[in-house]
Length: 204
Image 1: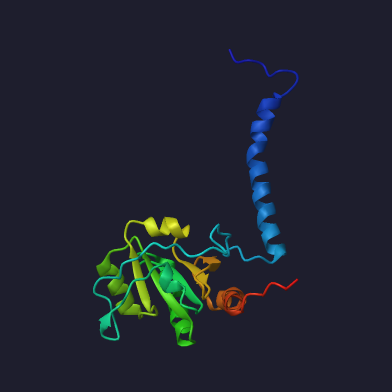
Image 2: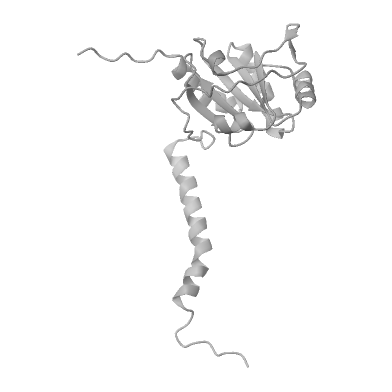
C-alpha cells in the first residue's frame, strides 16, 4: 500500500534538491551575460603566467621539418627574450580548429608578426604532414609529445596563442581558434601593448 502524501507537501530538503538545477542554469546565464556586458572576450581567459617570464623548458625541434632548406629549430625561454614581440601558438595535426585558424596564422606572419609553434601531443610525421599541406607560418617549432610543456605553459586546450614581449614575458593568452575578427579586435591591440616600451618609474 502506498503512503499518502503528507499534509505539509514536499519536505524542505526535497524542495532544495529540486531547485538545484534551476539555480545552476540561472548562475550560468548570469555569468554569460556578465561577460557580454563587460566587453570581455570569453576566449581571452586569464592565466597565472600573465606578466611572468615564459617557461624555461627547452622544446626540441620537430624532426625532419625544414625551413629554408635547413632543419627548423625548437625553442626555449631564452629564444623568446630576444628583444622582439612574438606569438607562441599551440597546435596539433589532430586539432580541427587548428586547421580552421591556420590561414589566419599565415596572414599574420605575412604582415611581419613573428610566430613560434608549440606542437602539442602529436607525432612528428603527422605534424610535418600538417605543415606541409597547409604551409608553415612558424620560424621555430618546438615539440611537446607528452604534454609536459603544456602543463608549464598552462595550456587548457588546443589551439591557444600567447603574446610574449621582447623580454620573454607572457603578456596575453588567447584560447581557441583565431579568426580575422579576433585578430583585429583582441590580438592586434595586445601585440601593440606588448611592443610599447615599459613606463619608466618617476624619479623622486
